Length: 287
Image: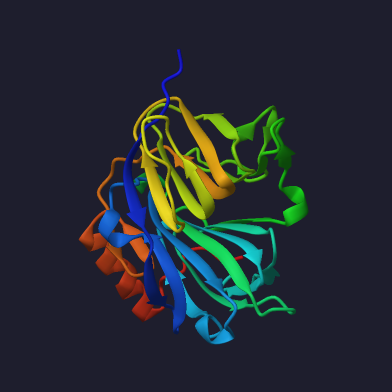
């Protein structure tokens, strides 16, 4: 018999200034570690004012983590120390494994018509055994992401994971994650199996709904709902429907030493990383 996961905690996103002056909403971050292990941070970008985002995220290093960028409106241009460069636009995903170290920049631009930017960046931790792996990218264009329409009109974009015999295009990730973008019409029910023991959360950014049978309906947006253990998630949408990200992953259960864009297991490893960044020996792998 299936055990439905119950919402055990609700977090509300907080306005935050990041990069060179980007206004965003931080759904969770440093202060919530290790509550959402293996996930470290989720940022929500949404604005029609270029002054809120055009300064972007100039050149900065990463080590020990994966950054997952998902754009719904606008464009994010990027470049890195390995010579990669390009842009991800509406519906695209970039899953970057920083591993042993990469230096990159991300410069957002709004949509041409309305200067609108909407998207998310999720940080996921790497285990100690893979902190120093070679950096890599999985860049997924919108048309490569399966969009399933279920019998009750629910639409699911399957970025990573499995649903109804389909598999998302992002694969071979160490923490065994799922990443779904779920849009539910009013008065519908979405049931989705999840792996027991995995961390599972939803981030609601449109509409309202009831995220477990035992809890009242959530009203308002920009909330993280962290689920307790179980083997399925059951969501009932409200009068206006609801849209949310549903994310899960295998927790690492390891110490976290985190400073800025670098996440290691010990303070000594952090000190080494920043020393290497200062003396020019940070990058361990070339193109």
